Length: 256
Image 1 (cartoon, rainbow, N blue to C red):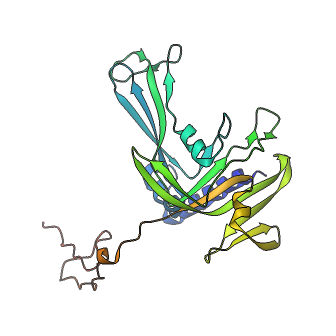
Image 2 (cartoon, rainbow, N blue to C red):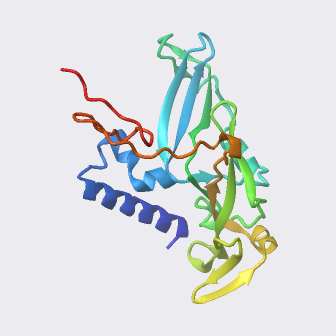
């Protein structure tokens, strides 16, 4: 079975089981997207359509657990694949969009952007061409141990590589999977069935990656910006501490 399909099935099943334990249905919209799985792997894409006449902008937000990127048409790196994914597309004659404000079919600009990035970014490279007898795209795609990922209008977030899945073979019908995993001490290991061996980061970066796992690097506060931890306050009678309150903050009860 394809590793990407297996990964998605695994994440979806874990997501559903977490919701089931909380008594939440997957059809409960935004609430369902707050599960533990979504908080780790979940992000949001924003699909925008801009009217060529009145400049009206329609936005649609879609939740995702991984990003599948095309590596055709001259894409040579992960950065190039992300740029191609977010590149504007122009709808012209014969493929016009019906503007919600103009109430007529117009030429428009269509663009997909990353609205919110996850804590763990899973990137799936589309190496298998399902329109050509499941043939595999074997060309090298460059990636790095650290990278900046664009989001929103001008935002960028730093990520560190900590896992790579590699497929050895020529199609989805045959082959063998191995994985490279970075331990907490920064040492990379090759996982090949029951055999585990230490490898260099250069070996990892030169592999023919199929699925990549990047962990978001959170900014570290400077010493002078780090406030001392306040002791937890004892709430007075009738008051309670709210889930969004800071340590020591008191949330007073609502007045009748």
